[in-house]
Length: 332
Image 1: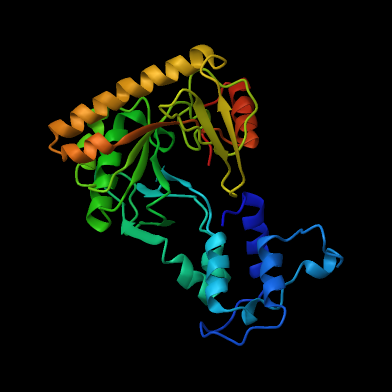
Image 2: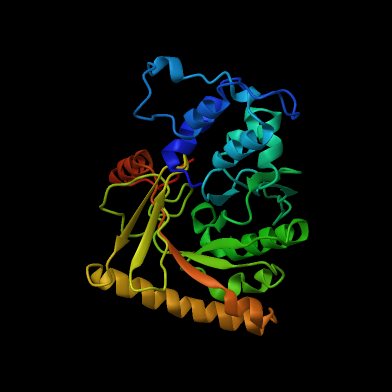
């Protein structure tokens, strides 16, 4: 059974209202269990006569069979995340601001169920370039990731270009030692292929390499020479497929999503430019990975996608204000 984004959010809001069972044992089913389940899965049926206020809390959830409760928790699973890896200039270490899925904190039952899908990545990423440089010991990178759907994004946004390659290679080296199960990774399209390809060889389960074509307002430091003119929204993923149309998947960190397509003719030069660049970079990555002795069967199955990241409007407003004053743009 597939649920829309709004239904997932509504279900999770209901379940986090302290209705979680303390134990995982199966309680006796309540007489109205089927209606209660329908309420969670479809919170706004047309034939209900009860007021909306009385339906904000669902106190019968602990009385549902455990099999049904676990299915409901599965429907609370978020869609794919872009987990952005950020470089901290103060501590000289990596971190991320990607939100932890709320169901991991709802109750012990939801957490147990969520951990069937999510893995906690936790390792020390701090490093030292020069003895006199600032350094914080034991700076831990920590996030929860679903390897089957989530994309790990190592961006230029948080790191000066001249040392980006060294930093990313260090991060990937640490990551492959802790968890080689990474399946989806993203880089800026400007990043030289050989900068990171040697560190991808050990990820035997790698399925997609996404290229970020226009991260218009990075969170730290780097800003594109030509600022964007269109309206800015939260993080956005545009997925380029090899079919006739360019399919765009838009989503925010909160999980709301809207699907739309751009026709190959209506998209015009944008469509053709994206396709040419993606196919060219895809060939370069494939050839380089094979040269680095990655299994050819893995390389042949790799998919290459295009991602377009748009930052929030408040970030763009801050950038424009600093630009008018002629100041260096740095955001936190």
